[in-house]
Each structure stands twice: as structure tokens, then as C-alpha cells.
Image (tube, rainbow, N blue to C red; front, top):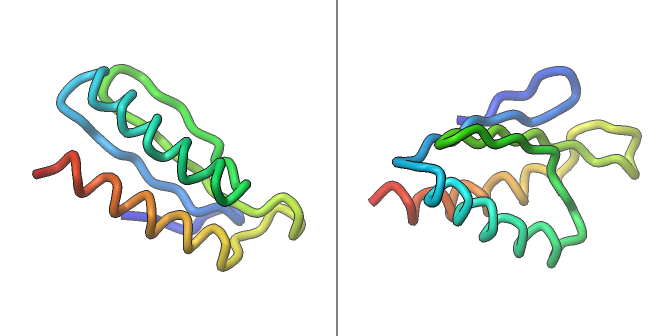
Length: 81
């Protein structure tokens, strides 16, 4: 689901509606804040696009990004049951 492109991990997540997409974003926000690692993301109706890179490392993909991507995938699975 994640692709590495332009020194970023990128993924798009799709939900049944806006409320579900927003709930997903809220869950991810809690994870990101805990790790002090905040994604660039956009949301339009039921789609959430996320880009991850580590600014402190020169805007490249690091293990910190891969770790957060895995955590985001676990959150997403809760919505796809």
C-alpha cells in the first residue's frame, strides 16, 4: 500500500464516508503526536492521502517513517473489517 517516491513514503486510504476518514485521521494523529512525528496529509470526503519523511534527517525516508507507516496500517485495518 505504501510507495516510496521523491524521498517520501506515500499512501492513499479509502473509507466508506467522511466521518470514518476523519476518525481514522484522529487515531493517526494520536500516534503521530506520541512519536512526535507528524505526517503531511490531505483529506477529501472519504480519501486520506499521507506522506511521510523525516525532516530532521534532511527530508528523507527513515526507520521512523517506516515505523509510523506500519502503525498507520494497523489503524487502517480496524476500519476495513
